[in-house]
Image (cartoon, rainbow, N blue to C red):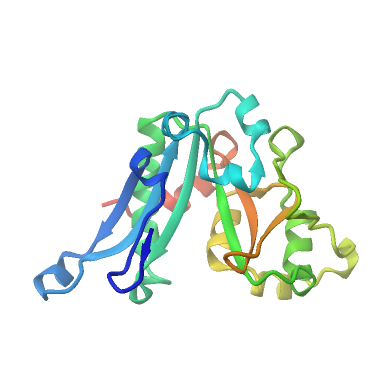
Length: 219
């Protein structure tokens, strides 16, 4: 369901999700594609209609289901290259904050990727995530075999935190700044040449300062 020539991609979950779209009308006026950012939002109700959450192919989400909280899976986050590093992601998160409030969402989650499948080459960032940002036991999802891999690769005293953070994708660091945590273990996806981690964000545990990171400048 990928048409590279037409720049279209879809999968079986798309019809059951809400799609958050960021547009720049100035591009439309110039005759350019005005869609500059997207997010896919899959609620628990949508997942039941689809038969599962997308992430359940990689992770056992039983701890999240047992929480009894309303779940929202975030996926397909993408920004046009010209809009990265600016306010575009803040605009998406501001709209996401409205969605969370409207749907009374308790837990956000989704998979995010490191490039490559050599876990040892990713030992620094994966170990840093394991030692500093592991989810509490009651929300600690685990990858499904046979492609799951421990992130407890290096002892904590061998983790170079600045180097680990430099090697961590910007999207993962953004969720960590919001108070996000990770499941126990990474999922090695050889088909997509990525090593994935499951990010989890408990909205009830966010401090006012963390909330302000994505609701400021809403006007």
